[in-house]
Every structure is written in C-alpha cells, then in structure tokens.
Length: 348
Image (cartoon, rainbow, N blue to C red; front, side, top):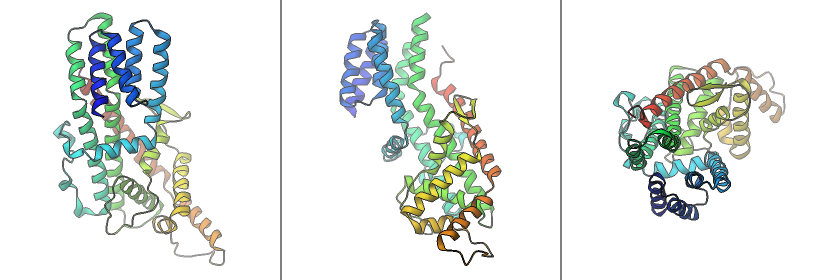
C-alpha cells in the first residue's frame, strides 16, 4: 500500500509540474499493483489528455468510472470501513469543537441504555473514519493548494477541477458521518422516549442492532448477536442515493424521496433473510404479540403471515419518513458546508 501511495504521489507531482510522460509512468505502476485504483486511472487519463492522446485518455476515464462505482458498492465500503476502523485511534481532531463530536470511546453514553450506546459508538466510528481520511490526504491537499497559488487562467481552472475531484471521497465520508450520527441518534431518542414496542420502535431497534453488529464484534449483554449481520442504514442509504424515480436535487447530491415502497422493501428483505438464516433472531427482533389472537386455530405459516401483516398495518410510515428526511436534510446541508471549508478555494 505504501508503494502504491508513493507511485500515486509521484505521479501527482509530475502531473502538476507538467511532466506528463513521467506522470503516466508513475500512475501505470500504481495501477499494476492495484488494477482497480480508479483515482490512478483518472489522473493517468488527465495526463494523456494533456498530450492529446484523447482516445487512450477516454479509455482511462471509462475504467475510472467503472471502478469508482464498484468501490462504492456495499462490500467495498465495508472493507474500507474495516481498514479505517482498525486505525481510528491514530486519527486527529480535524472537525470543529462546535460539531460536538465524540472524540474518544470513553465518552460513549454507556449509562443511558444499549440503544443510546450503539448509536454513540456508530457515530464515533464514522467521526474517526473521517478524521483518519483527512489526516491521510493532508499532504496531497497541501500540494494542490500550494500549486494553485502559482496558476492562472485555464491552467488554474483545470487544476481546480482536478483538486475538487480528489476531495470528493472525503466529502462522501463527511456525508456518511453526518447522516449516520443524526439518524442513529434520532432512532435512539425515539426508542428511549417510547414505553411500548409498536412496529416503528421494533424496526428502529432492529436497525441499530443490525448496523452495530455489522461493524462491531463486541457483544452487548442484553442483545444477542444475530447470524445475519447487515447494515440496514447502509441499505436504506443505498436505496435513497441510487435509482431513477422521485429524485430531488439538494446540495452536492441527488436524493430520492423516501416512500412506503422503499421502506417495505427494506423491512421485508430483512425479515426474509433473518427468517431463513436466523429464525431465533427473526422471532426475537420482529415478533409482535397482539393481546388477542383471533387466528389461534390457523397453521404456523398462516399465523406468521398474519403477524407480518399486523406489523405493516401498524407501522408508522409518516414518522419514519420524517426521521429519514430530517437526517438527509441535515447531512446534505452539513456536507456542503464541510465541502466548501475543506476545499479552501475561497482564498484563490
């Protein structure tokens, strides 16, 4: 990994200094080590375009977009998070104090219940992932800003575009950090303030449990580890950030309107996966116990179906959508403010 970073860093320096052939050589070496490095493909394409090798440059841009999309898939994001989580203690506090971030694991609110604890620890994880990414990218950022001071005209405009593109992954991590923090805290507060397990509360608990155990191995005393570990927040977010229908543009990204169909698909898929692979967790985390059982004479399968219908009939869709949209609005707004501050182009 250090060798890849060395080749990429050398390639960036050569690219920014106009040594395009040398830059192509360095990015090619980085790609040989990691053939799915979308950033190296993109920057090599830029270098080729400067030499008017447009057809070859376009091939690199196409490959860059292909590998960027693969990188953003759920499993790739999981691997990236795992690597960053292992190093998070090396992270430094790059965010403002006014963000009221949790800077160390000892500050997690253990005394306020398991769901508040899970929400805080998930929030802490994404804060440290962002901090670590900021730290690791600081040298490249400083190099761009230094070179921008000596550019003007089209050269400056082109360099600004490359620099902004290089910060998009950081911006995406900021979005994740803000969305997870606000959404998890909203769910934990709703659970804490409610005294009975109606369908919405059951699903809020399931979301936090699934996301917590997807990212952490440490067991909570009162909550069993399910065999099926899936980050339901990531799946929800994936549905809202991809697709063709009901898109609204906001901030730096397009976001789908959260509707009943998206919610139903998320819940039903999770129910089916749990029931198939971990029936005990399915019963424990989704079971609804009506005070009167009018279908006691039905078969076991019919009764399970009735319980599912009962769950969806009693689910508060409007309240859940309000939580989702509120967290999205917050994350999109905070990401944009973060992005403007992070790229620091207002001085040029």
